[in-house]
Length: 273
Image (cartoon, rainbow, N blue to C red; front, side, top):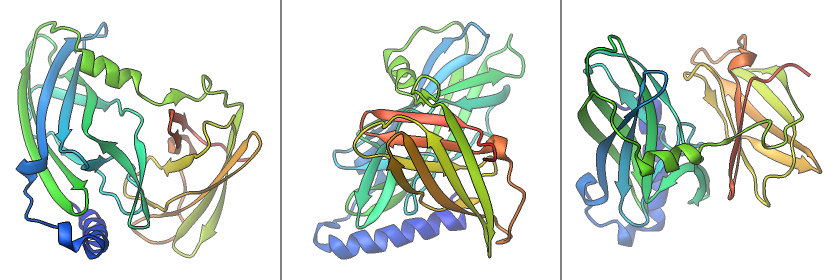
């Protein structure tokens, strides 16, 4: 189920988009624009299973990344009805950046194959996978969408080209992208913290969008304001917890992602200057 903050984002973006394109806002249902399925994948060398959720979107429609930007809707997952499931690990492909009605959002268009590595409580038994995924889907209008998917996961399975392509499209590791240093300055503000991340990183393209996340998903993070001077990229964002007050930041859980047309670079951990 959508959180209040997710619904507030969805309503805000829908209001603006519909004001700009009211003439195109014909009656549309989720089934018209979204189909979803589970790709059952294969067993990894570590004894886990690599599966994926596949979302097929109608032309012109998009959905959102885990950190969707100020106006996007982060997807939410409920695995509670699964059986013999111990843990899930997401492998997000590099997203795209969209400009919609003056908002910058981050997500996917056409098709999203989201690889998920699952661990069984008892590896000798199958996993009965059941997941509900709530998300926002948008074109000229935005819709709240929810899909309920299930599949039995057992046996060695077989490699899946779609899953392998999505795994290959993950953000590049920091070292491979040429990162030689990162630091984060933090200062208190009235309702939280202001974080300034400085990356010594070669330019990843003509246009770079920076997304900053914390380990605590309850913390709201503003759209980062980024600037570059030669090999140094600086991004500034505000972090506001539910208590709306300064807080102790877990620097090891800070994740900085630099997104460009060619892909993305992901850095985890941001020490003090």
